[in-house]
Image (cartoon, rainbow, N blue to C red; front, top):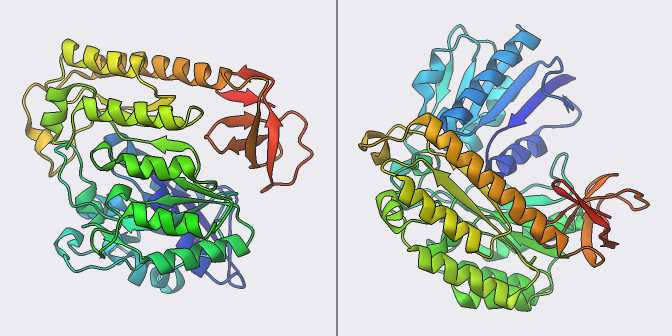
Amino acid sequence: MKKISVVTLGCKVNQYDTAVLLNQLPKSKYTKNKHFDEKADIYVIDTCTVTHKADSEARNYIYRAKRNNPEALVVVTGCYAQVSAEELSGLKEVDYIVGNSHKSMSLLRVIREGEKQKEPTVFISDIFKEKKKKFDTPHIDYFPDRTRAFLKVQDGCNYACTFCIIPRARGRSRSLDIEEIKSRIIRLRDNGYKEVVLTGIHLASYGKDIGTDLYKLLLELDKENIINRIRLSSLDPADLKNDLIDLCADSEIICPSFHIALQSGDKDILKLMRRRYLPEKFVSSTNYIRKKMPDASIGTDIMVGFPNENEENFKNSYNLLKESELTYFHVFPYSKRRYTQAESMNNQVDSKVKKERSKTLRQLSSLKKINFYTKFIGKNINTLIENKSRGTSSNYINVKIEDNIYQTGDIVKLKIKRIDGEYAVA
């Protein structure tokens, strides 16, 4: 029996890819360690490359793996492996580098048949040039260590935001057929999951390559009442239309929970980013969500310190966020990425300024979240029990449970008593 330690960095799409791998490993031959730092025969690092910090985190896990067991096989895969294979090849700790282009065809084989290498062996091709590449991710029966299952229904991106390297890491947009999505959700439901999160690199592009769209997918899932809960991952404001919001508002299974990636609240910075909308479009959509779903959670991603962002640009972002219907936001300082236009732009923002602006927005986000949670004190909210002490409501409230008499995976009504930091207490 071989022991394997796995860590997944980055987005829900990566987490789904890792789940696919673990579903394919025969339990009679492999056992997954609970903690990455436990001694293992094989270490797999599924990487992200959105920022320099993500790259650094991946390298730290590589070093930790070799320290834990110098004789172990170390396999690096994911987005960092796809775009920076040459850089990773310089690390003596690495045995195999498997890019996203080869995840489905080579990763499992490397783990099952791989041997220690004197220098890294690389499996990679130019995924962005593969214009006819189809969606090729296998199904999964279970999602390791999670009560809510993620389901990748879309991968890749056809757009070229000036700060983003992900299209090079993931390739062009491609989608999973609606009937296959339904089949996979049913399979997860029959294995005990009550919530499935639909994920993609650019989820709003779902279906464009196969003659359908996200609205039609959700309509089908809603008609068939296919599972207790469907939750959407991040959406692009440019593609968010009122008919989709109306569908979500009228549905009994689609969670009132939205994450809409703003990136900047300043029109000039959005233009430099090559985003396809103006701040007014974002505000219009979030206001409409709040009108149709007063209790909905609405989150966003916001980037600070993009090249040329001055105090006025930042103030525009801050004011939009302050006055918006948002309930939380993820704040990211801009990070140079190779092969992107923003890397060579003039007027790069000083790191100290980025840090200060990030802190300011995170404080605002925390206040927004507390104010949103406070609205539910004394109310009952439908909550999925994640473990003995925590649950997640349909509108994405983190619930701390004081006296948990429920089974993990149950959906129950819990009465909110008070707010404790980042949690609502029931």
